[in-house]
Length: 449
Image (spheres, rainbow, N blue to C red):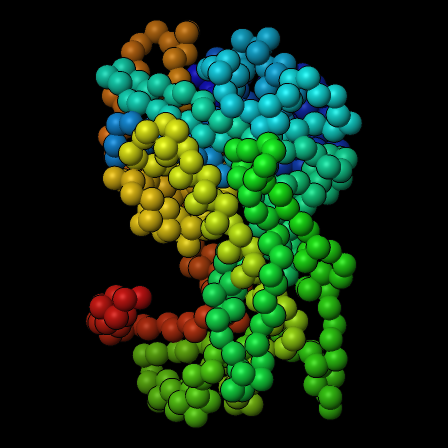
């Protein structure tokens, strides 16, 4: 039995025409550009197949392996299943969505079934309750907000940058600052710098008083969710070429977001470099490979200060909206345990606040809340989703989280490439002596690393 999901488009209708898939593969277009697209090992043609909607897959990925038997699930996402796929999927016996589980879901917009719009709508945020039983798990969809596709879905990334889910807005900031829709972790990392100043207050990040987003996701009138993309319009910060980014003598361009905090001491860094050079067991890549001149204290350029201001505003708004959203449905459902999934679940700052501040007995977040966890959700649905063709009873429901190490082991080369990519932002040490390496790890952990 095979269970699948791809929130970009339905899968099973495509797989009914193998000759067309072969044609796509031959031209390297659509999904045919991926190796193994038309391979039997990918399609498993003799298996029974079921397709499920995106947020339902997210819900299965987290609730089934939670360490508690019942609770509430909040899916905070960027872009989920289309409304059209879910609506017409009710006529398809091989497709399951929230609409097949309940006719009593609070929808935003509430009149979506009656609307006629140029483009489709996609899942943004969803809420479920669940309860594990002796022979499976029961899900009850409670709430779902759909976001409209505001630009042609045939454009770059389905027009994701113009959508208004919390994940899409955060991603828009990521694109604006870093030129990468999926660098949201860096946005989260920039945000806390809003409390810093440099050169005795001479350099300070701007404070933007007007929210990027505010209000309640579950309301439609007074107090409803609103958003403003003004801070992410015009020339993206990643494309700015301010004069101060260029050395006046060499015209060499500096990294736009490289800067040190006010406690940075260049002399201490140089002393550490000398110690590293004298220690044959330690290689500090971030200093030994750079000239001494680059070890001088770097003040943030104005574009970096502007980026900090935008990141801080977005992070602050995200936290306020999510706290309000989860708190509301905590009261509505009466559930005392919380599961989180969806791309916004990668924001560890808001996860921590939800776990600490709202009074849930337990909060569970799978190691893969984003779309990498969809495969686990599909697997869980296959095991516990009640396949009518299943001849044998399902295995016992999971009572604890699965191992997070389900993917292939990284090679030494993979590790080296990852370190090189992150090198501008971290200090890297390679310690050949195993005893010294273990001592260093214990010391860092003891210091709270």
